[in-house]
Image 1 (cartoon, rainbow, N blue to C red):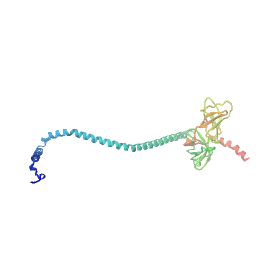
Image 2 (tube, one colour):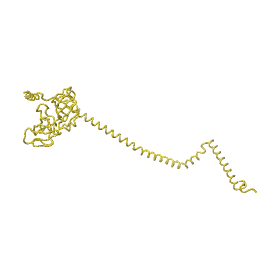
Image 3 (cartoon, rainbow, N blue to C red):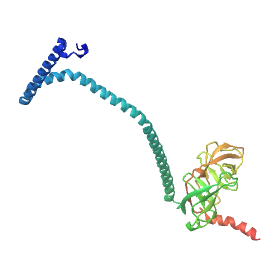
Length: 298
C-alpha cells in the first residue's frame, strides 16, 4: 500500500471543493470584467455613477493625503527659510551699512555746498576776494600756530592779506609761495589783532593776542570797569589797516581783570575753504612800516 503522503488531492473532498470554488469565482470575475469592459466600450456613461460613488468614497483619503503633502512642503520650506534667513540678514546689514555711508557722504556734500555758497556770498559782497581756496593744513600741537592754503603768488596773493572763512577771521598771510601760502593763525603767540565789542549798548576796544594753545587773550586798551561778559562777540575794528572792520573774531569764554579769554569763532580744524581778501588800507600799512624801515636803515 502506498504511503499516506503520496495521496492525490482528488482523494480529499475538502481540497476538491476548494479548487472547484476557486475556478467558479475566477470564471465569474472574468465574465463580470468582460461585461463591464464591453459596457464601458459601448456606452462610457453607463459606469459614471459607479465611478462617482467610488470617487466619493476615496475623496476623504485623497484630501488627507493632499493636506499631509502640503504640510510637509510647508515644513521643509520653513526649515529652508530658517537657514536662508542668516544670509539674508547679513545681506541686509551690508545694504544698511552702505546706505549709511552714502547718507554720510551726501550730508558731507550738502555741508560742502553750503560752505561754498557762503563763500560765494562773500564774493558778491563789496569786498572782492583775491582768491577762494582750500585750507589744506594747520598746526595743532605746536605753540606756533600756522595754516597752509592752496593758493600763492600765481593767484595774486601777497604777504599781509587777511584770510577769513564764512564764520570769521582765520588769520593773515605770512609767507607766499608759487602755489601755496602759509598764514599766521589768530591763536599764534605772535598774532595781535585790534578788535572791538559788537554791542550797541556797550563799547570796548582791545587787542586780541594769540596764546598758542587754541585760545585768544583779550586785552582792553582802556583799563577800568571791564564791560566784557561771557558770550560777547568781538569783531575787527579796522585799526592797523589790514582787516576790514566788522568781521567776527572771537567769543568771550571767561572774563579777567584786564580783559577776557576768548575762543576763535572760525576754528581752522573745522574750516574747509577760505577767502583771501586784499588789505583794507594798504596806505596805512605802508606808512606804519616806513618808520620801522627808516630806523633799521639808520
